[in-house]
Amino acid sequence: MNNIYDIKYTPRMSWGVEELVSEPMVLESAAGFYIGELCLDQEYKIPMPYSRLSFGYYQTREEAQQELDELTQEYQKWLYIVQSYMV
Image 1: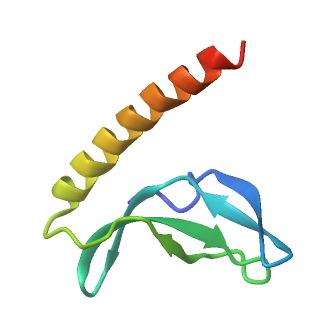
Image 2: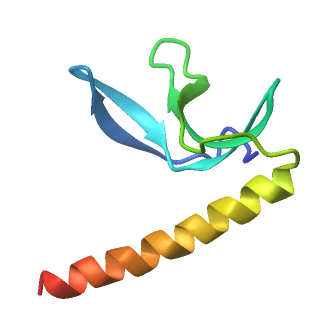
């Protein structure tokens, strides 16, 4: 995981409340590794789980990171196509 002080957050509305949410990253729980997002707790200024984006869990951090890297590449291709139609 990234150093918690290096995580970049973007404002996002959720249930009428603005929250600061991280970009997708590899996270770990008792069940294993997964791709998800963190939100920054406004009161205590600590990162907390926000969403789980992967359907399942991965046995290793490397497996999860590889999947995230592949998904990021696919997203970049999709974004390029969409933006080319908006010109």
